[in-house]
Image (cartoon, helix red, strand yellow):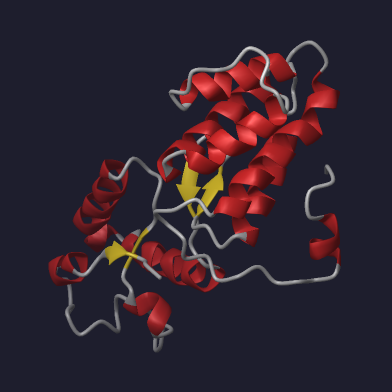
Length: 215
């Protein structure tokens, strides 16, 4: 499991609300480096510190010093701290692909996700090496219930449209009506209890209210 945030999880400390979307907090950037260096001794020749150093520096568009005074790790920490926030997530995806060569991609993913959750970030690294938006557990249950109802034959056009909208967002976010999280389901179900729907009417009005869940 690695040594990243073991005590915090063991003691049951709950992570903060995950609502950081367009940012990469400064402490999180340094913990990303801790995750990488925690796995390097397990990687053997498949992933070396030199590969990590030059790879990250060049990804960030930085002219890498061959022998920085305080060492490679310190220089990486400095340059990750100064990078545009979106590039930090590029480095995370790249790191997954590097440790995949050593068969350590799942351990890398597990530790990175601990760090992302601890800093309230809405993104999570998937087993495909890509970052996906996290939906809160309460919202997951509501989304599952709504899509279960959409599976009914009479809602086939609505389901097709919802799936197309999700795919257009590259599959990295869950589309959900905000009301499904703010107000729990009541009655026989979300669709049947929605005032926008009646009988076999296509739920076009419902589809217009689909939106990304936000903090």
